[in-house]
Length: 210
Image (spheres, rainbow, N blue to C red):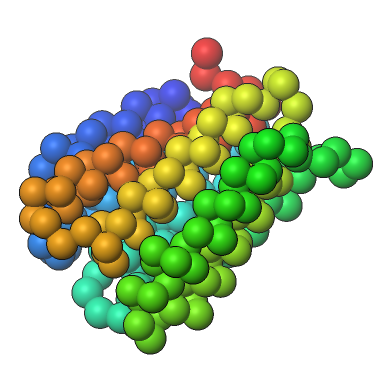
């Protein structure tokens, strides 16, 4: 398969997950479709001449998707660990030596991270410290993305969507208790998450498909 074919296949899997699975209970078909939609992006990445750290970030994201799609606290913690490792891979690739992130966006990101101490951390129970650590790591990734040059704006928007998806996920898991709103959040977070991963890949590809 060519990289373009793999991208199309990944988009089809992501669309299928959005339409039929994102709001449903745990099942093996759900896990396979969710994991595959990002795993195929990772398979496409070498053909697009994406940096290896981006390939690693996508692969770790797919692994995180698998764990988060399975039931139980241990699976949730494994998923968070995989995503945290993926964010560190992205941050290492994004960071531009000698460049500081723009002040206002950086302050907004830091304020959002700090705000989780008030609306998220008190609701996470025994998961408080793992959640805190994850918030720190994704904030670091987004700050690193802010140091990218103008030719990497697609990647920056991908990072922003990734942060937005985790914000929606936090609300869905720990804050919102209305079935209707939870379903809406499930759709919104999946759209933001997968689009974010795809934009990160396309923005960092040395040989983009278009």
